[in-house]
Image (cartoon, rainbow, N blue to C red; front, top):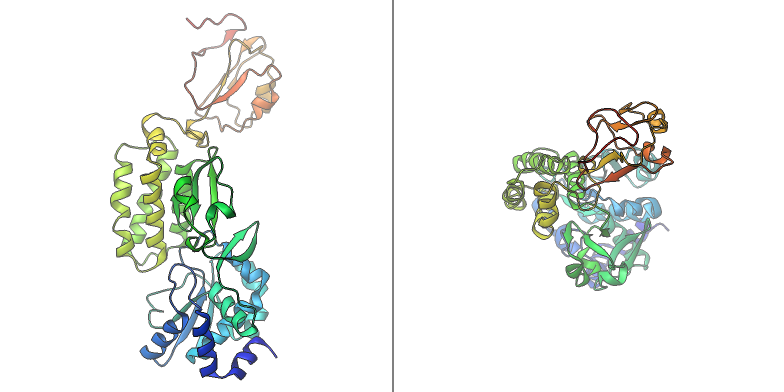
Length: 393
């Protein structure tokens, strides 16, 4: 007997009671008793549809692993949710670029009468229907199978596991040496993260950010991912994400302006209340938490013209130490951008404008005369000078 057949055999009333007794909830950003969502959908309309997927804002996609490790449970849970609502059809939404995963699931989804869609869930159209997280669908199937465990999902090393919801973040990942922690959909200081729990990681993600990682660069990548995920229908989400991503990108490229931090806050504050789905709501919180808690890192980029982590290439310089260069020409031969000028027995020079900072010249220099730094450049020759003849003063 399949999981769906077991649920059907149990009968509607018994199944509802079992779900209530277990305290089964919707998963992710909008936890509420699952049966309350079902009853609300049943009360609003007759032609009900079930929409399953990740939260729209979940660009980390950690819990997609459930569709790789236990797809049958997720699909069975969706099918059971459709039975509870008498749904006309049920859909499983996958991120737009997850076409290979959709192809892998195609046959199994068809067997469970689930339609696959590569997109985000349109909450405008689905407002009166049943939207369910894939983790909640997996929990629903596990409940019917008798294998359900309470707790929060956490994904580590590509594997999803259930842990007690009150498990401290510090017991799940090492916070030693952390500069910041990305937990759920926001940035936290290590001190804040120590008091948070697995239940706070609503997308199953707890990621430690070390001193060799740049917060500003991380924010820019997240805003870009959110821009790509956004449907663009909410003006505040569409325009807000354009501005938030643009400012973060300008800062990483050494073009940041003094007002960008305040403007990031100004744009982020109304977005949670002016956008319909989690894309605009959670992305704004990510940007806000970054500038509020790690403002000094933003200011270092803007005011001091330095990336503290040494990540942003616009702040990284590669130069040839005139006192160490022997004029051998090895660096010229390996430079893919052809941006090193020099000839035998003359101190070589790097054209920073064309330099891609690939570092191949550093590896090729046996004299260790080529240096990569995020600090201030020393005085360098501005024309070809014979080896040993350059004077700094």
